[in-house]
Length: 63
Image (tube, rainbow, N blue to C red; front, side, top):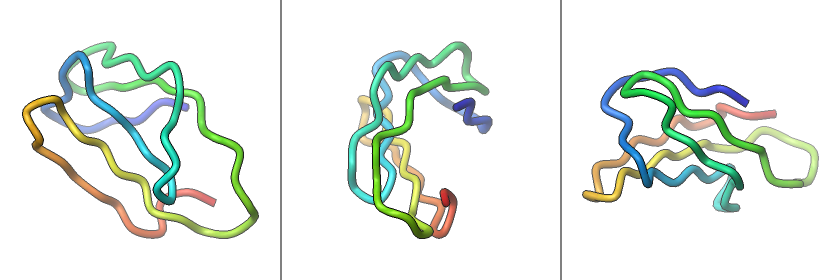
């Protein structure tokens, strides 16, 4: 999956419904690529956290 936004840095983490994504790569300050975790059906939040603890959560972002 590709996530677009701003201020991403190397070492950022991504979670979907509280479950960590794998192979997270901050390709640039505006783009992260990742593999989504296995999860049950339904809508969940997506959160991105930079190593300096700056974080953003998008509720109902992933189905």
